[in-house]
Length: 267
Image (cartoon, one colour):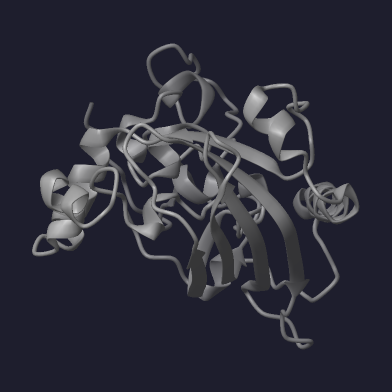
């Protein structure tokens, strides 16, 4: 895979969107507005399963597997007996060992700009704040509710190969009893690039589709929806010899090829 060069990309300007961005940017803003207008969510309806699935900001339901809690705790803080020794945790007044407050992923809180609107992405200045109210125990079920999300185009007025976007999200996490366990605020600055039409690219293997539990917990290599529904060509998705192929997630699967260079594909 070759490195990108500056002249491989379009020059982007603040508030001036190319064809691949216009509708997606509007849809993103509409989604943010719908969350703003929603008001307080009905927590009891949410945990009882009667809240409409299309309720703005009702994002995810996460089970809390004991094996995953133990794995993450041992990896991040192996010397902490409270989160690694169930008997000790119970002696200290807890029901069981518990997950770290960061157990729930943040990718749906500071939701990135739609993947189809970009060809590469540079994410920087990621920061967040979590206020923890109650422990997260193995066997819990967590419900993620987005309370607010904003996006600002901070691309320099003179234009740049990156479209710089400042995205902020606020969310609350509830357990199966309707109790709030976390409040979260996440902020991220993205630099989005758009490859010029006519450039040579290769389509890569499956990657982060951003929808299943594996992808949202940092394990896209075991994506539950893999080849057919997320990225690229492979088992269940035909078209390896097609003249044209639609890339659904170009920021993850398109690899730029230098001019006059050959490429070898190993299967």
